[in-house]
Image 1 (cartoon, rainbow, N blue to C red):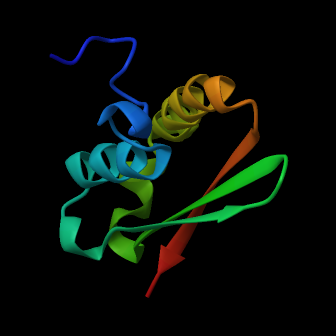
Image 2 (image 1 turned 45 degrees about the horizontal axis):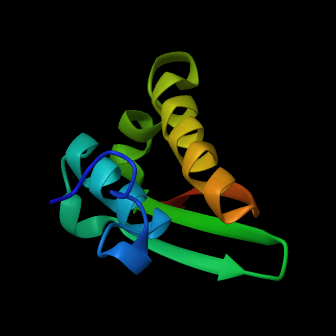
Length: 94
């Protein structure tokens, strides 16, 4: 059984940060097949690149950046457990 404390822990069969970002992004856009998420990891930091179609960029960012801010808040909360500085980059994908 998954509880809220182990949902986002890949070692417990939960979701990774990459999977969480992908699930959220696919739920927001009109073209979920055009969502790509990649991770660039180093010893003390993690960069999560979210690539979406040009037409869906506004849906990911949201009014006044609220959706992007909310996704970043979730990413930062999850990354606090890994003790790595995490950055979410939103990239327009042609």
